[in-house]
Length: 102
Image (cartoon, rainbow, N blue to C red; front, side, top):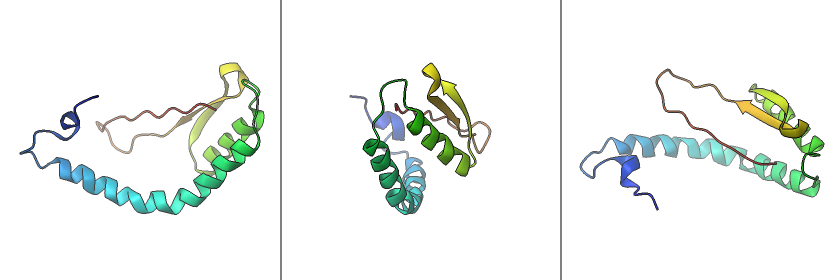
């Protein structure tokens, strides 16, 4: 397991507190979307699809990305794959990649 100190810095370096503060600020947004995300997940699981035939799932994902104003490319990985793109909000900031399988 990776040593978590590599993420927060030395014990005498309190700059990591600002990261915790930023994460705490995200909690209300996460809580506000929890019901929707849970319902979305349940909907997808109520309509199972075979590998490379996830047309309904792919359409649902693309619809939500469109509603959110996010750029995406569809038709990947056998035709049903979707690649969403969330642009950075500042130059030189850290990059985070998220991956999910359908």
